[in-house]
Length: 262
Image (tube, rainbow, N blue to C red):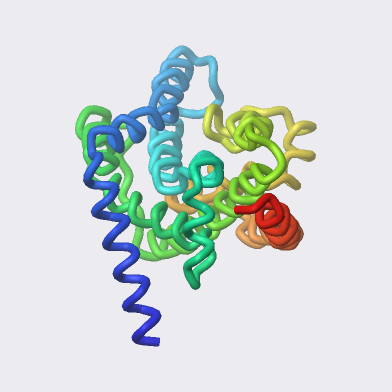
């Protein structure tokens, strides 16, 4: 166990050093993920104008929580895997006694630590500038939020890593992932609170994983009443078959990759 922990620590420290080496690029990517803050401004304006059933405080706090969720669950493995396959990095990593996916996981985890100061700064600015967004979660809510956040990140990573394995057959795996990203943007609660959608739409959407990826952890952080069992069941119902498909694609893709002389 101590040997495993030592390897994990070394890998995370190396990835963290790599991430902080390009801080300007990292912060630019973090700045590009501020869409929930723009949605906050638009919905707060709509609430003040009486065009929304939600109050300004409800909207402000919700989208601030959404911003935190978005920053801590962002995933980009499909672009890295695709690049590694084409530039030969994957072939090199296959020689190591460690499946390449762990390099990507370590990179994502280390990036969270490098991104945290920027995220904290923007949350602090919003907290200072807007009275409506201020809320203090309880210790229980924070612990529950971190647990849910870990599951959501794992699911998002699994989804995108599964799409990335299509790079064994196509040069544009990220284009396929883009087809998933569109409903993710509109149905997860990132652009609009899910309560704004018609009931007929939500009766269908609630059985998809999208609401569980943004709205669910945001509501947990805010201490709102949420059906935790339903969301966990939906994530499991989609995640377990997806994991089976992922492992099948990895084995078939690796055989194809090796057969090509890599």
